Amino acid sequence: MDNTRNKRKGAPDQRDGSANKKSRQGKKNWDMPRKAAVESRSIQPGEMGIWATCAMKKEAPSTTELRTLFEEYASQLYEEDQISETAETQDSDEESGDIENEIKKEIEGIRKPATDPLFKSVHLSTACLVFFKTRSPVEPVSFVRKICQDAAEGKKQSNCRFVKRLTPITLTDKATERGLEDVARKVLAPHFHEPDQGSKKFAIRVTIRNNKQFTRDSIIKTVASLVGKGHKVDLSGYDLLILVEVYQNILGMSVVGSDYDELKRYNLAEITEMTRSGDDEATKGSSSTRASDQPAIVTRVVEETNMT
Image (cartoon, rainbow, N blue to C red; front, top):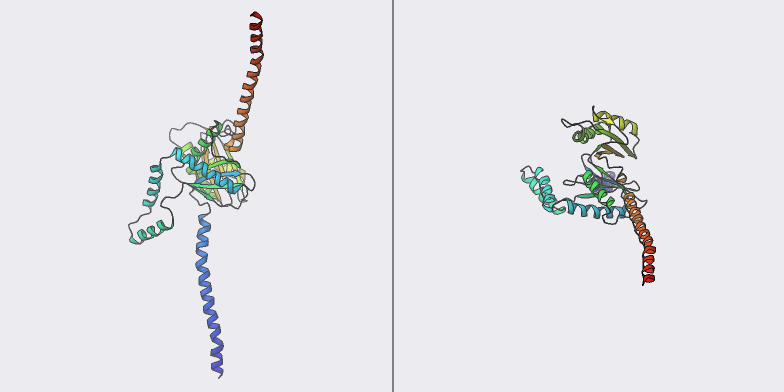
């Protein structure tokens, strides 16, 4: 009887154990997609993109406005077949001729579009900050510069009511000393290390957000040393400006031209305000000119009337 009772008492424990096991298995299955989803929304080393600052609590509308603006410019600057060819090239690089991989690709093709979008927004936990990942053929520096140049020339663009500064990023890596050095070597090489390249004046500007590992001075010192000999620092009369952006555990870098400050540091809000102020002054000037002409016209009419 005692043995029977022990067996009966053991049965619920066994059932509970199997239930817990199933529960643990179910939990494990749910953890994997969540982790993958988080990674898909984060900035990964080796990517390029565009940072944007915006008005407080206007991250969502700013993301929508920027996507519209970016897609409009992409349609103007790049051919449709060029974008498609880039996507096909990326797919072909991953082909290994394995049947299993081919089946996997077909399944992935059903789950997601055949062509990745040129611009992917990244969910951030920081206020007033937006990031868009980009892919070839978009080159962030020339792309952002074109947008700002057009705005400075008064070209009408999609309404970006809350967007402020755009910062292009040529390459990203982990926010470590090694990551900084690797990014600097790759990004700086075309601008400072090409054969028969003359001496250039340069400056470095650093932005650090939510990161306590780096200091502005340490970054400037490292980057300046990797620029190399034969080039001089000039903070105001630079030929090239090196931008370094550090955000949490990721850092990015790009090199922009000497018109960066002239274009209000790629701040769309300030460029738009500058353009409007110029238009208002031009309007006032033309109005005052017309007003000053009126007395002369009236005088001529009076003189002609008296002569008759």
